[in-house]
Image 1 (tube, rainbow, N blue to C red):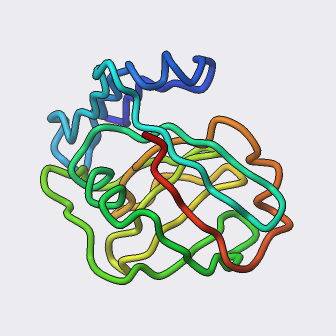
Image 2 (tube, rainbow, N blue to C red):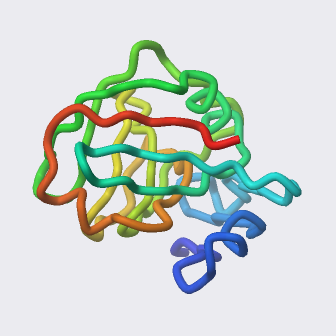
Length: 158
């Protein structure tokens, strides 16, 4: 029994803010692992500054995302990991209340890798990883990630 994922790859950023992602996966015995819902009137947006490049992203409404938003504004040092993602340590652990056993990330996904407590932003496709928690998705500028290493500033746009 494999995983079933309802995703948002072809949706606009506004639609993304309203989707429900539901994973049914074998690591949880076929039960619903976690539901992410962001059906608020105020979509949670962030700006990520990478030197001269500015990325925007839509965050999901879940405990882990809200905890990350509470840290903003924050500057983190992004480093390449495995030619697939940019990672950074965080100043403290984030809430993982109700989080799934893992996640299958796509290009542009902003995630937390819970075992190491680090932020991971994907610029290439990757497979399912236990301990990975989706926080949000980059709306624009993801092409700037692959060539960037250094300080990035994350700001909550209110």
